[in-house]
Image (cartoon, rainbow, N blue to C red; front, side, top):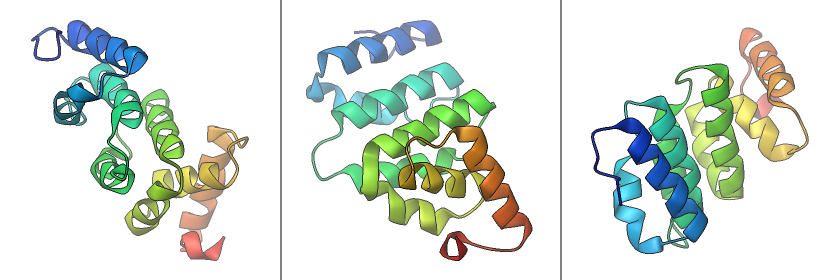
Length: 137
């Protein structure tokens, strides 16, 4: 379907298609792209993984995604935060253990899905600057 292609755009498009059709048999191939060096492929893999992850594997998926915290541009970090929010409460313990501004901002978004990413990052930066942790919120 294109997941193994060298061209990043082909991998990204294949992932997008898989997320729309919900083909769970593609999970192993999607899983392999979660850390793709191309930002757009990784972003598409994160979104697709949330849709296709086998039931009960949400916390494990969050554990894989945590390695991508602080990666890339603001928009890429926002996409990762949205993937964590889509995973829901299963992501909370993983993010709490990870710490750091991006993890704290994402926890804020889990608490308040209406909270904008910028506001969540601002609050997380304040907490980190004061030497606090998620438990201090």
